[in-house]
Length: 79
Image (tube, rainbow, N blue to C red; front, top):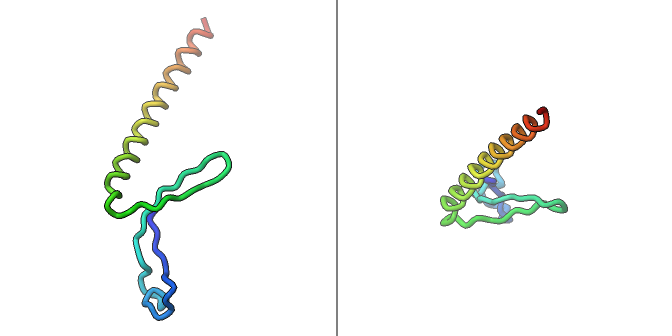
């Protein structure tokens, strides 16, 4: 998640309709009971983006294997 924030200094340009401070990056995740966000320090953004790409590739593979197993099950069930 990319966020921009207004600071607490009321004299700052961010309170006068100008650009807010940021971007600040966060990773967001959910469990059964809550959602959480973790701040990502700027030096780790590229590493985290690569991890997210790998995570998404893994889910594509898992979905493909799952679909294949469902199709095999259906074929055997119909015989």
